Every structure is written in C-alpha cells, then in structure tokens.
Length: 279
Length: 279
Image (cartoon, each protein chain N blue to C red):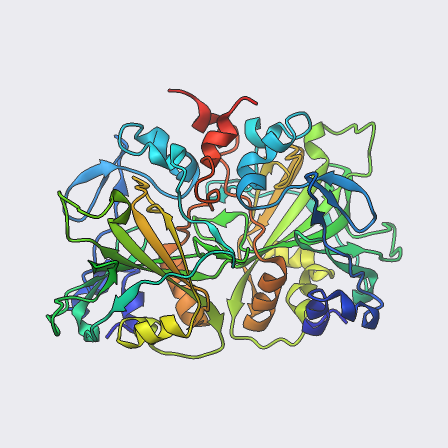
C-alpha cells in the first residue's frame, strides 16, 4: 500500500489517482509576492532550507510571529550526548492498520497523517506524559537527520509528532504542547520493496517494546520549523533502524534537503543571537 | 591498499602499524584553554561543526583572522543551479600510483595527501586555469555533502584541492589561490571491497574525460573552513559517483558530520550578516 511505488508516486502528481489512500498534495509554490500557495489555497510566508529563506533568516522573514528561531534558548535540533537522562514517559500505542494513514508530499517533507479508527479506550495512537495524553498528529521525515547522536548524523530521521488536545486552555505548562519521538534510519543492504516495512514497527504496538530495548534520550526543545515554538518534549531512540538504498535515494530525491542546523545546548544562548553579539 | 580495511584502521590508532602507506594521525583534542593540540604538537584555536564552536560562531572564535566567515559575500558551500556557467578550464592530470598517497584522519575529515613521483613535464597532478598551474595539494571528504545540486544533497562530497605554488607574490588575483574540484557520491548497491575504487577514476587520467562527459559547474567562492578565504575557484561535477553502503557507513562513523551550512548566492550579503541586521 505504502510501498516504494507509492512513495515514487509523490514525485509526480499525475500518478495520484492510482493511490486512493495517498493524498497527493501539490507542494507549495513561492510567488513573486513572497507568499506561498498551499494545496488548500491558503497563503502564508514562504520559508525553506536554503539561503535567504533558510533557517538563518526565518526570524527575519517574520519578526512578529517567528522571533524564537533567533532568540529562543531551547531550540531544536541538537546533538544528543549520553549524559542526557532517559525519559520515564509511559507510551500507549494502539495497533492501527496500515491503511489508516494518508501520505502527503507537503513540499518540505513527506507526511503521514493518521486517519485511524478507534481502538480500545483511546481513539488514536499516542503517548502519556505525567497523566496528560498526547494524540499522534502525524509522522514526518527529514533527510539528512536534524538531530545528531554522539556527533554523528543519520540519512533519515522520522518524527512521530504527538499533540496535546488541550488547545486553548492547556493545564500542563506551555512546554508540553507537543511530544515528538525521533527514530533514526541508517542505510543498509536490505532490499525491502516496501517503504512501510522500515517504519511499521513504530506504528504498531511493538513501538513501546522497541523503546524499552532501545535507550531513549529526552530533552525539552522546540519545533524545528517556524514558528520554532519551545513547547516540545523530545524523545530520541538511540539505535537507528534500517532502510534500503532504493528507499533512501527515492526519499532524498523527493524531499531533497530539510534539516535545520544543530542548535546550542538547551538553556544556552541562541547561536544566532550569540553570533550577532559585538563582543 | 586503501581498502575498507585501511579506512577502518583510521578508527583506531592501534592498527596503524599494519599500514605503512597510511599516516594515522591522532585527531586534535580540545583542551581546557580552548586550544586544540594537533599531531605535530602545535596548538591552534579549536573549531568544529556543532554548537558554540560550530560554523555560526567561527568568526566569533577569532574575529581577527576569520572575519570572512561572517562578513564575506563569496562564501561556500552553496546550492548549485543549472543557470551557472560551465568552466572552460583545462585539466592536466598525470596517472599517479595508488601508493603515492598518505591517508590521514585529521579529526575533522579524512585527507589524502599526494606523495607522487614526477611524471612527464609536471611533477604532480594538477589543473591549468588561464595559464596558471595549480598543484593537487590534497583530497578531503565531507559527509553529508557541503554543496547542494538543484537543492539536493549527497551522502559524500570529495574535494580535490589544488593550490597555486605562487605563494608570497601571486601574480594571479588573490581570488585564485585554490581551485577545488567537487565530486559527489551517492549510496549504491555495489559491493566494492575497496574504498579506493570509488574515487580512483578521479585520481587517474580518466579524470579529465569524466569531466567532459559530466557537466561541470563553476563559481568563485571560499574555503568551507576557517579562515573562509575567498580565493577559491569551485568546479563541480554534476553527476554523482557510486559508493557502497559499507564504505559510506564506515566513512560516516569516522568523520561523523563535517558540512558547513549552505551560504547565500555569491555576491549577495553574507547570511549571518543579514540575520544580524536590525531591520
């Protein structure tokens, strides 16, 4: 369903009709006015990963709404070292069907959006953090990885983005709007014909067990895209999973490059802010 | 000679004795005084690719000697697009033996230094640019690639660094101290047992022919490491070469991450400088 072939379809809109479960979205387009037009017709300020619209100038593109990209002191991604504490979070994952996800090329990443039916007492996959429930909101992919682990990067980093449903009046601190679990992928000589097979262990109930057998590092940081909000609990599996050469090359051809540069140690001054200090 | 096994030896100094042709150098060490100590005992200011000693703060580490990293308007690497003009340079490559290179782990990259005997009328491999000769000074590797090609990156980028011997009184403009040829590598299902085989076509006389069969893009930029001197002619082969999964993973484990973020279009204001403008 979500095999290499389906991933390949994201390269071309023309193939969309063949994949009823894949929502092939038209990537954004940069217009002469500096706005981008998205699939739903809405316009927002254009940003990307290169040059004058890249990560160094995100705040400058929108000083009012995206100031944290240049001033925040809890920015992501970072380099993970093994002095960090493991998370003690309790994960609760249902076992959704493969078909209950839509795959989209947003123009900046490939995104899987859950459309899963209710299973058990929770209606979606998610995570429990100190008695607060976060729903799985979507899964995105970055190439190369945004986080580094002991100074090394990986060819692919998946983000399992979980979001607190308590919008408007969040009782938890503002620092807990999102919880994002990171899974790294290393290129391997496996010959999976199915892109899905590489990530499926993390969409099923094995996710929790994988977390137990795999040292998980945890820190409080930010979204890695504008507005760079510092309300994210990051949760990083240290052991990479395997992805085939074919899948990696295809994913890279679609996504091209979507990794923000690593930020300073959490709590230290924002790197851009530090670079701009006269002394 | 320079196979996977030899590359593996760079991980551990203990194996050095087995490889008479590989100069296994102790990587630099960051000291409490902020200096690094290199294999030859000399000390210089520490810099790397992450956080407070990473690319955003190179100028801040040494405002006197490395100002161009933050102010230069011809900085590298960049995104290459196909509006760039091809180079008309004349390459002259001898056919040196494999054994005439030393392989070193500098702590920031793997470096091949030529120790080749004289062949023909030139005493080393090199390049002719408008009647000026540049010697091959060394070959270094970056992972992931520093340059991007049509917004895409590659897992490995090799730099063939050629240097004008006219030190002190260079008659060519200061903009031509270095000429660097870029070769990208993509991960492939090939199973070369020899790291060398992936790059050897570029160390032999086929180099010139490869350049003819392969569109070459050209621009004037800078060193991608401190002091970021803007005296480099870049020369980029658009078609990537193949490297095996084993070699890529091993190279990445040794080098970890050594790519500077992409810079602005040549001639446009330095991105860091632009980020620091109040308005």
